[in-house]
Image (cartoon, rainbow, N blue to C red; front, side, top):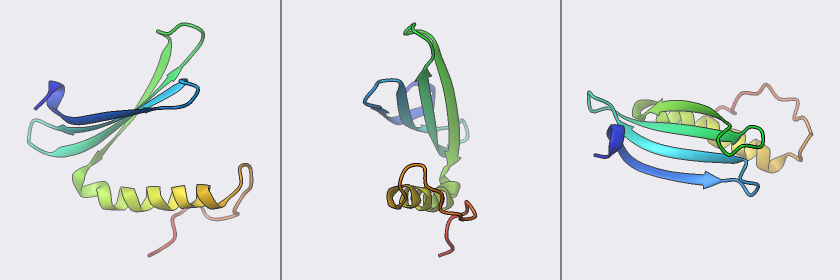
Length: 94
C-alpha cells in the first residue's frame, strides 16, 4: 500500500494546463476501498496559487455513481454547447 492508503493513482491535465484531475484509489483504516477524485485549478499568475476540490466515492456507491456520470456525459456528447435540453437534470431511468 502506498502513501496514505493509496493503491492506484493517475492524472489528467487539460490542454491549457489550468486544471488537473487526479483519480486515486485508496484504502481506509478499516480496509474499505474508495475512489478519491481531486481537481486542482490555477488561480492567478503564480504556479502556487491553486484551488483544490475533491469528492470521495466508496466502492458500494460506484454503480449508481457511474450510471449517473455516464448519463451526464451522454447528454454532454449529444447537446451542443450552450443549448438547454429542458430536462429535469436527472439521469434517465434504466
